[in-house]
Length: 233
Length: 135
Image 1 (spheres, rainbow over the protein chains, first blue to last red):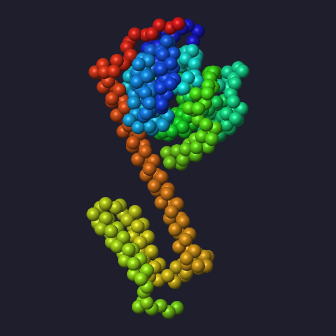
Image 2 (cartoon, rainbow over the protein chains, first blue to last red):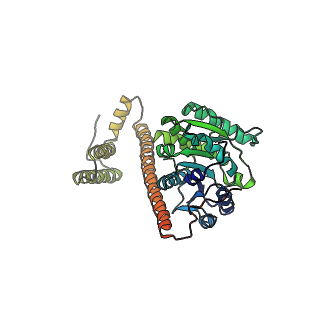
Image 3 (cartoon, rainbow over the protein chains, first blue to last red):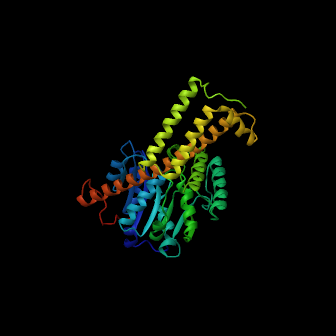
């Protein structure tokens, strides 16, 4: 996207943020995103803190789960909400501040041109990407696993920064409520034969994002969850 | 093989009574159409087999031997383990269905509430049509 996004594109692009007990960061993240993208939808996944109020105050549209259902469920709720609200493009963005809103435009460019249905952020395509060693190793293992299972030749799999066209969002139906949704999205991209591309994105690893995000041990739980969701679709 | 039907111990009385009771419940549930034929037949087979195994324990040895197992008690043990796994599996499937249903309800409620809030202008949603300026 060499030219700046048009107001129409900005108005029809919805940024979906799943949040669970993120009152510390959600306000800053929403305000930052809204500098360029007015439609920010925060799915408050049954938070017990003031995440919903903080997000609303920062200008987000808040959709609140009455009880915690997991990130996958929250994203699917966000997709459903955005589609009914007329979204043309949807961007999934993390609530812990590890993504940069400046890169949304870059992520949307392949979709806006109509060439692709899905743009997947990849931290490993970013030159000089600094990823903690153990995390890098686990993510590379996930990449190999995904290549075998879904057939998608990706460089990064569990990256929450993605952009979907309306068509893609309508095709994708996440049934894995928890963390296995990241693999499920890739499966569905593959099974629906959606045109996808990877776009380099930068991930900021802060103490907060590492504390809030998946621990390295969670990789095992994600794997089990994913396998079970494949056995019992 | 000799067997006396007259010698029945207290455990056998209790066990046979329980198995008979459960079997009767299965039949009643099936008659009232609260149990589908296949699960009904499976439950009835289970309780009948348990009743027979308690009443005539030596029969388990005969069946065990036919399956290449020496003792009847071992056969019961293996079947119990197998039954436990089948039970876990069925419970897991049911739990997933309930979980999915719960997520659907939570989702529908959340979206309906959000849309209602927008329609009524409640909560000062900043979903205004104005586009914030970019830096």
